Amino acid sequence: MFPFNRTIRSASEMENLSAEIGAYLIKNFRNSIILLEGELGAGKTAFCRGLQKPLGIDDNINSPTFNLLNEYTGRFGILYHYDLYRIQSEQEIIETGFIDLWSEKSDMPAIHAIEWWKKAGNLIPDIFPNYLIQINFSDEYDETRTVHGEKL
Image (cartoon, rainbow, N blue to C red; front, side, top):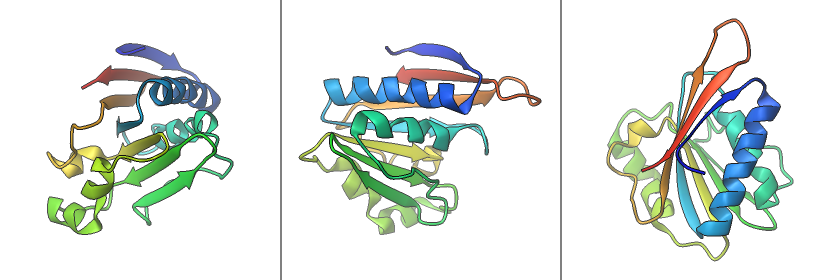
């Protein structure tokens, strides 16, 4: 599964790709961290929406831009969806308690999907498998994206 490069032509294709990745992660690992990289509007939240199917989540997945974290519990696991866009320093991340969540072993499979992860610097632990997903616009005039994934 990793590494991969895909061309995605719609939000539904993005969700299908991430559902495939989510199924792989919960089958092979109890806990994992996905580091999402891409410009505003590239499809990071659409990627997270696709994770709800393999985790058995019925809720609508929305961007946690103002909450910083949305937590969704499904029949087969938990999705922690972080958006660090508004974070100004590593100290702010320490104060949120996210580092404890990123290190906590869950009873159910758990995926931590972190948008704007570079703002966390070196605070993201490596006790669970970490995967980098880069989403880039292929063409500014259509919905096409290139998605690159690799295990770190």
